[in-house]
Amino acid sequence: MYIEIEGQTYDISIRDTEKGVTIMGQKDGIIQLAVPAQLSEGELITYLKSTPFKKLAKSDRSVKLETSTTIALFDSTFTVVVQKELLNPYIAGKSLYTNLNPKSKAGLNNLLEQVLMQELKQRIGFWEEKLGILIDSIYIRKLKTNFHTVCTNSSRLTFDKNLIHKSREYLAYLCAVAVFDYLQMDDSIREQLANQHIKDWKHHQKVFLYELKPQVNR
Image (cartoon, rainbow, N blue to C red):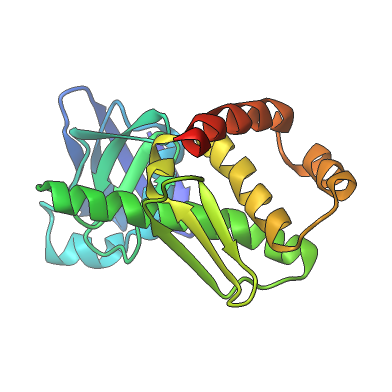
């Protein structure tokens, strides 16, 4: 099949046995790619937009996008897609795009923290824009008695590193709670904003209070 993105045409061959996106050649300005069947169209388009194929096609026709490794995070499983030119990892669909496939526990932990930080910045950024505020610092570390802490004097939010194993919807709720706590917001305003912008927030609130209680008791 053919896909045209930003003026560049790609000839896509879907292969069940293919382990990565491979440049097969270039003819009449059309870049020919072999693509693994498990890579969705949305993930492929995201990849094509972020990869300078015009340069790659001329310099290295064997460049591959590795998709054989999976990783567990955000209460789900994602396929690891390696793009060496990336500066920061990101999630698109059911794939995690990163510039390096971690081979050690330390490397894996570092990748998970990078992904968590990207998600936190995105969620907090939404509220900063919505409420006209600015949070100076966001930190990640292991917390013993809560999922987040707030320091208004230094304009700092700190989140528990184990949130990487919670769902992204739950993380969105917790980011909202952290911002509301930071602003010392009244309950009525919290509820109004939650109703407008947080899906299933009452369910997440019940889970939050349930999980928080045993931690406090310890």
